[in-house]
Length: 461
Image 1 (cartoon, rainbow, N blue to C red):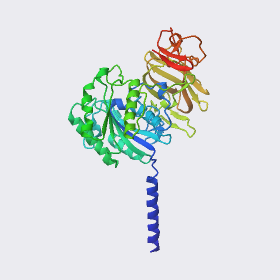
Image 2: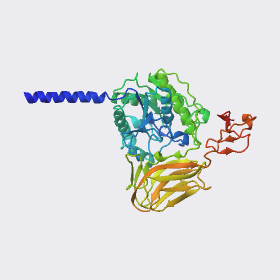
Image 3: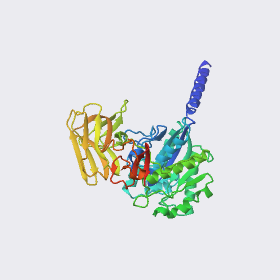
Image 4: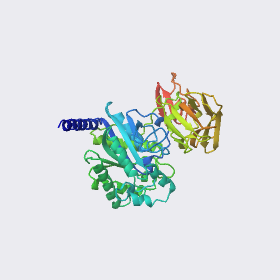
């Protein structure tokens, strides 16, 4: 009898513990699930202004990606999907949300998206046959990065996220592949309702917010999908649609450029804020300020290794610990970034390297590199007029297998003090010297650019 009482007491204690653990989810941590194809995974160039989001905006890594581990929360420095993705709508969705919510509130995103997919990828009954029909190796590789079942990975991470906060919405950007009939609408409805059911959510509390694809005003190659996308609310009462009018596209007329992603992300946020009863005044075209006098820290961009025998982790003090193979590579994917405004890249080591280290920059004009001998505290590569306008990847290599501890990786600008705030007398804005966003002088006073007028930054058009 005594034993039964003890067991009952233990069971009650465990039950209370379980209830307490579930209750630890922060009601002020608003979580949004983000699904779709290439425009949701992100195809925009990640620029200086994109690298310092508010710490209240976080992302859950939905796969192991360098120092990021599946199911863990991190500051939402792009990329938010996979290591090889770029700027996406969720980036400025989250930043705009936290900028318009009370200081005590945080926002987190959980992104599972793959380029070129149909909505069938998220269909609980049809995903397997759809995956089996794939023929493109890059698409199959992306599916495999999510354990071969992106829907299951989304649900797994969403349930993990619910331990930390409250799911407040589902963001969808998909349709370039198949949003051309009402059949797509019915499939989206099924996907949405399945997610709500699997996660024990109410539609009234968790709206579906879908974005238009590139529009006719931008000669969008899939713009004819937008009339179908705009019919979603007729079938799904809790669906909302975000306009893409004015969101600029890249030369392929399919993917938004960085400016377009920022604008579209802010529109997603405005809609989500409206659902929360907040009428936010949002500058859709704002470009976040960058301190041109400071180095550009890109440490968090180095997320993967070239060799399967290598790995990178984060130490307790925040250093990157690169367990290197001979001539492997700790890499950063940039996908065509323009580095013409920078003079050099520097890797600072937390302790002297025990082997020769080498920086390799893969650019359109050819690879450039620079080495440092064993025992060096850093290695740097000066660009010195080399073509760095189309940089695809950057990597740190070692001459032998070794462990390299990296405290910081950063870029230096060519002109760190180009913009002067000195008082200017008797000059109109039209006659003031102008600078580009990187702080470099723009020849001629008649050229558009940024000027300093009465200690204010003014855009001269």
